[in-house]
Length: 393
Image (cartoon, rainbow, N blue to C red; front, side):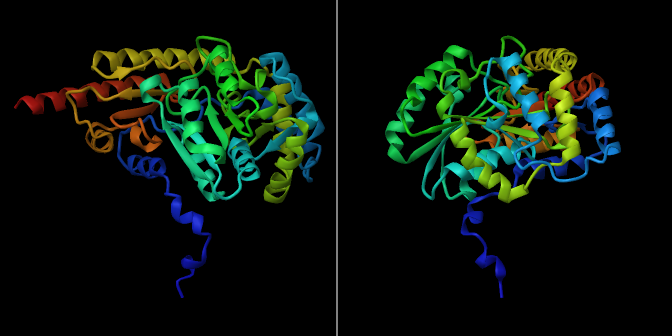
């Protein structure tokens, strides 16, 4: 018997990750410089490591409360208020297994079969997959003509077209893959469109500490009652492997979200929560040295890409550059990326893997050392020069 025929039928609509497939392909190429990895190359701060060691020594090896330890949730509450003027009580916080579980919990909790979710693209494919698994319908909105931002006009038009079955809008800022973020005025304007409509805003702010040009803005300030906030310590404190995410919402919403969380993972690791409590309690500025280094890396790559004729908007946050391939080079971004990896020994993710609006683009992560970035840019320069010479022969 072919048992796959009897699996959840929604899985047929979920495509295996092209990004992971490309990364696996590139990893097998000798001497390649990898710009695909979306995690900090820094180590977790020493004081956070020591907090985890103390936690182990004190035998914090038992289940934590399902929504998180009181210390961590209190520190989350203080951190969000002090850093971003976002106000959630500890009881309005759920500690999740990374931001990934927070996103899954929020989407599965909100959607009924057939509900629609507006997702601005290009975007990280995780949201699309989760909506599909939950029986919802992703409504992909190409933002390439509006500087990779969802505008109030685009949002209103999409809601009017899709009708009352729209249940959620996903916003990720600073964004993956574009590095684009929003001002408070822009978010307030989006909030005005959503206000008093039965539509949730799922705001993924995992890169909030990596805003380079302006203070971090948030829809929670203008539309708190309809917003579900996603955050965590993975990017801010280089703690991707600790798997601590944060899910915040008004108390009545959290009461419902916690049901999916409880029956999915029970609780996150107690030792990791103790480490995160230290990170947010005594390391509120731990991201600043990392952010300064990221800016140097960003600017170095931007200068090289501009010299090569790639069209690149300066990213204002996160650690990604989304660049349009120079017009005299191969315009199929998948073909270009695979050939660049094979013959140029530089791995950059095809832009079309992030949805409509990504054709002809590449995503480069600068969460790698400056030495590797310089080597990668040198190899990219050589590859582009070789391509241009071959076209003239």
